Length: 461
Image (cartoon, helix red, strand yellow):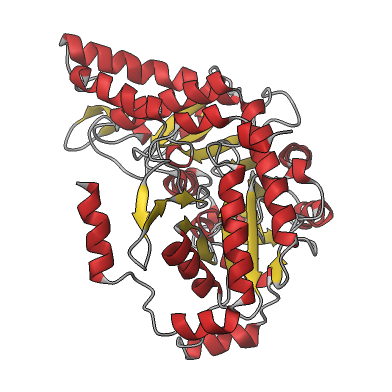
């Protein structure tokens, strides 16, 4: 296969791929973004659709004007488009619009169980903080263990479901890890959850943009009861997220956030709440965000998820092969095989250099954006790095101690093999000059200096 000619047209779908940025020596290079797990740039089609829709933008469900009718109709139709994209059931499920995946999980955590003393939520050791912290102050929470490669233990999952004797109200797991890229066996997990009369939530933030998602029929043991994901990770960064789940979950009780659009009748003494999803969406909806998400879904479907998966998996294999050829690089998770069970995320460290230093060098001297740290998944990182409680305690007592973490590469459909070549060359040079770089970057602040930032700001105008 000629990697360099493979799917080059995918690159044309995304805004800003040829943007020039300054390096610390004053020269300019084409920026490389390998931080797509955090957020993605917009599709060209998304910006175009938003621009073309703006003249028709108006109030939703609050006016009889022609533009208001157009806006309201688009708003209503959008839910069906989203359910169709993930094979949800419009007769059973509702789509609730939120800002992002974090808000979606918090909303469900608020509404899941009214008798919290009897409710257990089973999370996992690999979750993003957004699928851990919202449950902690509301329910008893326990965690499914991971194996030595950082993958979920289905044996431990079933043992814990048995342990609580039917009290587990929800099993909540990542569709794919934002740290290792491991795709979890969500359908096997769903079978286990339903076997023990438990519902399952899949955090689809890292899975939905990169692999085909199917909620499966309601009557299937593999049915996904709840699904959440964010548009800003799928090339539509306009502040919208989605919570999909059974309409009955939200039919009773008060919403977590109330106001305009959430009621049928209100007096000073009485409130008659509207039906879901309306009562869960207080205030004026983010219609522009919805327009962006729907267009992103259309573009993804036009390209074909199979094509996207194949390209990103080839990028993953190519990058792993290149990284393994560099001495002094440590890869984490399952990077030996099972590429079909991963999205295109690679965590690593350079031996002898702090992860923050490596990320700074790549940015300042090669124009390559990566993520470093713990990626809002500190318990998972601690287990992968084998950080013990004493080490955590030492850091809590003395915050000047370098914080453990990793460097993360995460690819999108627009990334290229040539960009990976540039990364490999940069890392090879870094590993062969570790001592000099370590001394140099101890003298450079984490943030760019003001002149450097001004150069960037100036070129945006």
